[in-house]
Image (cartoon, rainbow, N blue to C red):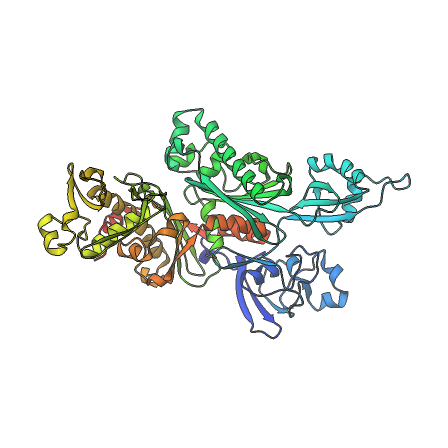
Length: 619
């Protein structure tokens, strides 16, 4: 259901009236707490516990509208205050329109800056409580668990079996002075003494090509260590389709792919713990953002239905997982949070990216593009959010390009062509050996600019090039049956040079046409003109290298000012970090499943015609 088609009760209006500040009116999904609604919209509400209801500082007064009294409100307010509308903001879900007075700050809420300039109030699922308990006696024969839970009376906790196994020894080893470790509402461990200062989580970005891990100090919100590695599943194929195909052709392939995913995640976890001087048992939760195929494979779930029509997932979300279910050796009771997916080809990584870039919280018209073999596209205007996936193919990753390679040392990542010269930017302190995706886009854009490629994508004939760009005409060569433009000589044989061929140009045209068709269809669905787009976010590692000017020149993105085109970086990984730092952000991620409308391109009767229209380069 699209946001604009939701019944009125699904979204509510909250008017915040900060003491000494300007009133703010916001609209949020029904059921969001006043604390979340304020923090999502940059309205400061006092809190030191990050919204757990334990510090009792997030006091607000509901002056118009109904907000029920929560179970914790009577601990913070007297009867007269409750009648006057005083509530703890973090315990106040809103079901209808309300007006709220917000007192001035007494303390500064703990927050971390993550995502695309996002301020996240720290409210991790992982809590640690140090308690000093009275020892059992013949007169007080309460169970160990009853004794502990009585000291945690502000929490509603159920005990994990692993925690129960540790409980008697931990109590008696430390004279009944222990630290309870709680994740969400589960007691996952009991540790002797006071270990409350140390609690960590690991955020994973499980990419098809690269896997990254960030160790986070959950008490401060700061990264303790970061590392990455190539996905070891590469021998089974460089994209999700070939890996799905591998599982269809070989009944043993899924098991091997799952084992590779587990070993990769576990190796990265070990590396960041070592680098951050953290013991693995001090990691109590992991968060993972990945596309639907990578997530299914990591969980050992058959991905075949994702690869054949009608492209069905086993589940949008996976709850109640342990880190051990993903092969990660940390605290035995550590939980795992996986981002939910919108569809088979708009997975949890895109939900994480949309969360990190605030696609649901910005009133501007914004376009989010994660360029890759499967290109995910999100378009939002502040009220509506549309998403789709375009089959771009592997050209942007250097695959099926004559001199293509990944963004590794020796790869040409930037190209500038003047009337008589070619300037190359190469990764690493080495000579050029190949061309990666960003270099390919730059080269094609530059050839269009100097007139050696026409709008149809055809390399100019030698006699025309001699007139159009005489200083560059000599770089147009013949390699076998193909016309090429030489970027870098490596000897006398043209076939040994680093070049861009006519076939390479066609591969790029097909890729960019698929993406441009995708976002143009979303714009048409939303009823806007592409020129109305106010910001373009280029996500992922490719987006970090891609020249905005070149992207506009070839028609990959709308023809807006390059100042409006922003490299968003690894927003999937940023979203995973946000999920570890705040359960409120997780709620926002799940809300996106209801807010975003997915547009399937494969069954659009107008897709092919629109695709053909986008093959040409803008004149």
